[in-house]
Length: 269
Image (cartoon, rainbow, N blue to C red; front, side):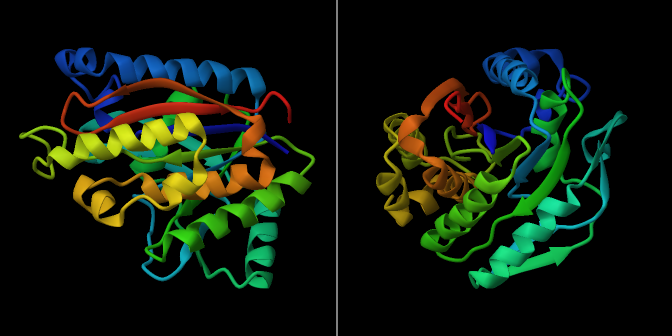
């Protein structure tokens, strides 16, 4: 059963051992949102988490699942040689995902990578602060069409519904990377437009609106979270998104990249 669903950003700069004090202050809304999310996570105590990361081993033509029995993660590339996290995989859940994807003709690549990428590790860092007794199933999206991503999410949702254990899912991804002139991908006025529109549609739970978002706008925004969110919405549509409450915990773009922290309340499930 699904008991936790969230959208998170993944900037390493919000990790206290990486970001300098001025940067942490600029991103304090995001950090506060992640801390609130971690509190909710500790309350509902999922036994396993599926996490979709844009920085995992993405393949253009198929989705990816990491079947390594265990994982570690660190932030060496960002100058943090202190932090290291370790997680176990849920082999049973992985096997079920493989089986159903094959039956539904969803192309799913299996990889064995024992190191978790930072797109997954940043949210897991915060979520594991107050509760650590959960397994992790890392997933990566593809560059197949949007409807196929939604279908993949529905397949995951059908599996989660049948599980007796508590399962959570996280769509990791930043929104537009083009909010400011100094943004990493350069500036576009359409970056803010994309972020505002996506958040508005999420608040309305307008799945069709999100699926049918102008792909030129998505491209111009320079985002990395749209496909993760589409998969999440597929899961939620299978569960019954109309019964869920969307809660935006924080949104800001202090460095020119949109950071959204949000969850769907699943009190009825």
